[in-house]
Figure 1 (cartoon, rainbow, N blue to C red):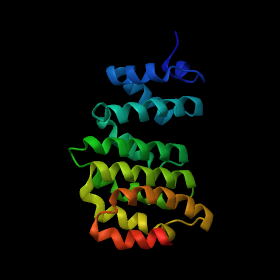
Figure 2 (figure 1 turned 180 degrees about the vertical axis):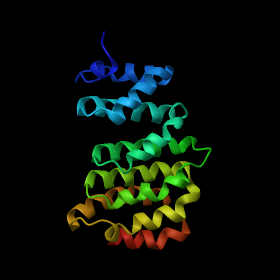
Figure 3 (figure 1 turned 120 degrees about the vertical axis):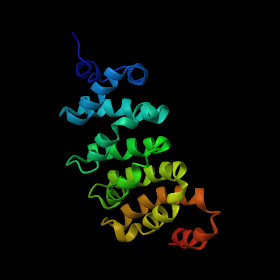
Figure 4 (figure 1 turned 45 degrees about the vertical axis):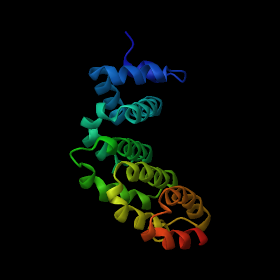
Length: 189
Protein backbone atom coordinates (compact mmCIF):
# COMPACT_ATOMS: atom_id res chain seq x y z
CA UNK A 1 0.00 0.00 0.00
CA UNK A 2 1.36 3.42 -0.98
CA UNK A 3 1.34 6.08 1.67
CA UNK A 4 0.87 9.76 0.99
CA UNK A 5 4.56 10.31 1.74
CA UNK A 6 5.57 7.72 -0.83
CA UNK A 7 3.20 9.01 -3.51
CA UNK A 8 3.98 12.67 -2.99
CA UNK A 9 7.75 12.15 -2.99
CA UNK A 10 7.84 11.25 -6.70
CA UNK A 11 9.20 14.03 -8.91
CA UNK A 12 6.17 13.73 -11.19
CA UNK A 13 3.53 13.53 -8.44
CA UNK A 14 0.00 14.69 -9.29
CA UNK A 15 0.01 18.17 -7.74
CA UNK A 16 -3.49 19.11 -8.84
CA UNK A 17 -4.87 15.76 -7.74
CA UNK A 18 -3.32 16.18 -4.29
CA UNK A 19 -4.60 19.76 -4.05
CA UNK A 20 -8.14 18.64 -4.84
CA UNK A 21 -7.95 15.76 -2.37
CA UNK A 22 -6.45 17.96 0.36
CA UNK A 23 -9.32 20.41 -0.04
CA UNK A 24 -12.00 17.71 -0.08
CA UNK A 25 -10.74 15.22 2.51
CA UNK A 26 -9.80 16.21 6.07
CA UNK A 27 -7.86 13.01 6.74
CA UNK A 28 -5.67 13.59 3.68
CA UNK A 29 -5.31 17.27 4.59
CA UNK A 30 -4.20 16.33 8.12
CA UNK A 31 -1.67 13.84 6.79
CA UNK A 32 -0.21 16.25 4.23
CA UNK A 33 0.18 18.90 6.93
CA UNK A 34 1.79 16.34 9.25
CA UNK A 35 4.22 15.21 6.55
CA UNK A 36 5.04 18.79 5.63
CA UNK A 37 5.86 19.69 9.22
CA UNK A 38 7.59 16.50 10.40
CA UNK A 39 9.04 14.56 7.48
CA UNK A 40 12.79 15.02 7.02
CA UNK A 41 12.84 14.07 3.32
CA UNK A 42 12.90 17.27 1.26
CA UNK A 43 11.01 15.58 -1.58
CA UNK A 44 8.18 14.82 0.84
CA UNK A 45 7.93 18.03 2.83
CA UNK A 46 8.54 20.32 -0.13
CA UNK A 47 5.98 18.60 -2.33
CA UNK A 48 3.54 18.74 0.59
CA UNK A 49 4.30 22.45 0.72
CA UNK A 50 3.43 22.82 -2.97
CA UNK A 51 0.09 21.18 -2.27
CA UNK A 52 -0.69 23.23 0.84
CA UNK A 53 0.46 26.52 -0.71
CA UNK A 54 -1.84 26.10 -3.69
CA UNK A 55 -4.74 24.64 -1.71
CA UNK A 56 -4.55 27.33 0.99
CA UNK A 57 -4.50 30.04 -1.66
CA UNK A 58 -7.59 28.54 -3.29
CA UNK A 59 -9.46 27.57 -0.11
CA UNK A 60 -7.89 29.16 2.95
CA UNK A 61 -10.98 28.33 4.98
CA UNK A 62 -10.05 24.64 4.79
CA UNK A 63 -6.60 25.33 6.29
CA UNK A 64 -7.32 28.00 8.91
CA UNK A 65 -7.42 25.36 11.65
CA UNK A 66 -3.73 24.69 10.98
CA UNK A 67 -2.66 28.22 11.88
CA UNK A 68 -0.75 27.08 15.01
CA UNK A 69 1.29 24.60 12.98
CA UNK A 70 2.09 27.25 10.38
CA UNK A 71 3.00 29.84 13.02
CA UNK A 72 5.36 27.34 14.66
CA UNK A 73 7.22 27.05 11.35
CA UNK A 74 8.24 30.71 11.54
CA UNK A 75 10.87 29.76 14.12
CA UNK A 76 11.96 26.50 12.48
CA UNK A 77 15.71 25.88 12.15
CA UNK A 78 15.22 24.97 8.47
CA UNK A 79 14.69 28.02 6.27
CA UNK A 80 12.48 26.07 3.86
CA UNK A 81 10.06 25.48 6.71
CA UNK A 82 10.16 29.17 7.65
CA UNK A 83 9.31 30.00 4.02
CA UNK A 84 6.40 27.57 4.11
CA UNK A 85 5.03 29.18 7.26
CA UNK A 86 5.34 32.65 5.77
CA UNK A 87 3.49 31.79 2.58
CA UNK A 88 0.69 29.78 4.12
CA UNK A 89 0.04 32.33 6.88
CA UNK A 90 -0.18 35.08 4.25
CA UNK A 91 -2.78 32.95 2.44
CA UNK A 92 -4.72 32.34 5.64
CA UNK A 93 -5.03 36.04 6.51
CA UNK A 94 -7.81 36.12 3.92
CA UNK A 95 -10.07 34.22 6.35
CA UNK A 96 -8.58 35.32 9.67
CA UNK A 97 -11.85 36.04 11.46
CA UNK A 98 -10.29 35.31 14.89
CA UNK A 99 -7.47 37.80 14.20
CA UNK A 100 -4.80 35.18 14.82
CA UNK A 101 -2.39 37.29 12.80
CA UNK A 102 -2.17 39.89 15.55
CA UNK A 103 -0.52 37.26 17.75
CA UNK A 104 1.79 36.21 14.91
CA UNK A 105 2.63 39.68 13.56
CA UNK A 106 5.96 40.21 15.38
CA UNK A 107 7.27 36.73 14.60
CA UNK A 108 6.16 37.04 10.98
CA UNK A 109 7.96 40.32 10.39
CA UNK A 110 11.03 39.20 12.31
CA UNK A 111 11.71 37.10 9.20
CA UNK A 112 12.41 40.24 7.18
CA UNK A 113 15.76 40.20 8.97
CA UNK A 114 16.30 36.48 8.38
CA UNK A 115 19.77 35.21 7.55
CA UNK A 116 18.44 33.69 4.31
CA UNK A 117 17.66 35.98 1.38
CA UNK A 118 14.82 33.79 0.14
CA UNK A 119 13.13 33.82 3.55
CA UNK A 120 13.27 37.64 3.58
CA UNK A 121 11.72 37.60 0.14
CA UNK A 122 8.92 35.27 1.27
CA UNK A 123 8.20 37.69 4.12
CA UNK A 124 8.08 40.68 1.80
CA UNK A 125 5.95 38.94 -0.83
CA UNK A 126 3.63 37.63 1.86
CA UNK A 127 3.23 41.21 3.05
CA UNK A 128 1.54 42.08 -0.21
CA UNK A 129 -1.13 39.42 0.41
CA UNK A 130 -1.49 40.46 4.03
CA UNK A 131 -2.00 44.10 3.08
CA UNK A 132 -4.66 43.03 0.59
CA UNK A 133 -6.50 40.97 3.23
CA UNK A 134 -5.82 43.27 6.19
CA UNK A 135 -5.48 46.80 4.84
CA UNK A 136 -5.91 48.24 8.34
CA UNK A 137 -2.34 47.02 9.07
CA UNK A 138 -0.82 49.31 6.45
CA UNK A 139 0.51 51.75 9.05
CA UNK A 140 2.33 48.91 10.79
CA UNK A 141 3.57 46.98 7.75
CA UNK A 142 4.71 49.67 5.31
CA UNK A 143 7.18 51.27 7.76
CA UNK A 144 8.80 47.86 8.27
CA UNK A 145 9.16 47.37 4.53
CA UNK A 146 10.45 50.89 4.01
CA UNK A 147 13.10 50.28 6.66
CA UNK A 148 14.54 47.33 4.75
CA UNK A 149 18.10 48.71 4.77
CA UNK A 150 18.17 48.69 8.57
CA UNK A 151 16.33 45.41 9.03
CA UNK A 152 18.45 43.22 6.77
CA UNK A 153 22.15 42.52 6.94
CA UNK A 154 22.77 41.72 3.33
CA UNK A 155 25.12 43.47 0.96
CA UNK A 156 23.71 46.33 -1.11
CA UNK A 157 23.12 44.21 -4.21
CA UNK A 158 20.93 41.74 -2.30
CA UNK A 159 19.08 44.53 -0.51
CA UNK A 160 18.37 46.13 -3.87
CA UNK A 161 17.02 42.80 -5.10
CA UNK A 162 14.61 42.67 -2.14
CA UNK A 163 13.62 46.28 -2.72
CA UNK A 164 12.16 45.22 -6.06
CA UNK A 165 9.49 43.30 -4.18
CA UNK A 166 8.91 46.25 -1.86
CA UNK A 167 8.41 48.45 -4.94
CA UNK A 168 5.60 46.13 -6.09
CA UNK A 169 3.88 46.67 -2.75
CA UNK A 170 4.43 50.43 -2.85
CA UNK A 171 2.91 50.53 -6.33
CA UNK A 172 -0.30 49.17 -4.79
CA UNK A 173 -0.22 51.93 -2.15
CA UNK A 174 1.22 54.87 -4.10
CA UNK A 175 -2.08 56.77 -3.96
CA UNK A 176 -2.05 56.77 -0.17
CA UNK A 177 -1.19 60.38 0.73
CA UNK A 178 0.46 59.34 4.00
CA UNK A 179 3.00 57.22 2.15
CA UNK A 180 3.38 59.06 -1.14
CA UNK A 181 6.47 61.10 -0.23
CA UNK A 182 8.07 58.26 1.71
CA UNK A 183 7.41 55.91 -1.20
CA UNK A 184 8.90 58.33 -3.69
CA UNK A 185 11.98 58.74 -1.46
CA UNK A 186 12.32 54.95 -1.23
CA UNK A 187 11.97 54.60 -5.01
CA UNK A 188 14.61 57.26 -5.65
CA UNK A 189 17.01 55.65 -3.20
